[in-house]
Length: 224
Image (cartoon, rainbow, N blue to C red; front, side, top):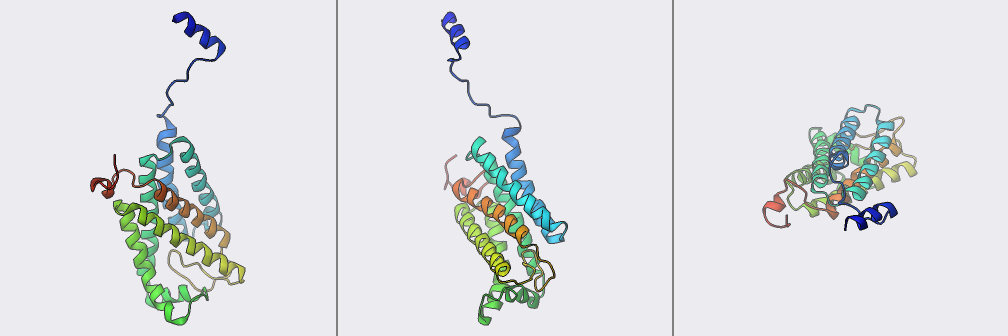
């Protein structure tokens, strides 16, 4: 009755209305999830403000995904943006390495002083190929969860390698977006925080695949 509803409003016991799904909370997570990794990849490749940009960008990416998980969990547009953003990162990194001379690819791997000599060339040559393949899979949304898992494992390996170099007192370029070898002042903390943000992207894709515009969805591997 009208009287009962009025009393409910006065006492604060009226049932809550439907959650608000429009507005900035709806489109900001996907937009930022795409923009931040692209920005981080560009600054790392161009070595522009890499130290502080990596820290700020990585933390911002973690914060955006945490916010998205609370406000729009399993949002397919956020997953699609995460796929596209991580695909740009991996594709950029892979192409940057692939376009360099094989000797420089090997130097970047050898500088970590972790692998036996017999594995340096295969890893140096194979890593950019793996990154490009993962980028294509993520961009197409094909085998999305597999791509997310493999990308996450790759980021974990990168983080462990950088942390190991830092702990052992090595001063090397991570070689993440090309380059490698000895440098005077490596931004290890920035690189680790940045890669943690990329790892969070991979985790999101793994937990909530495949997102919009995904080949997996067209093949019927995931329901709408």
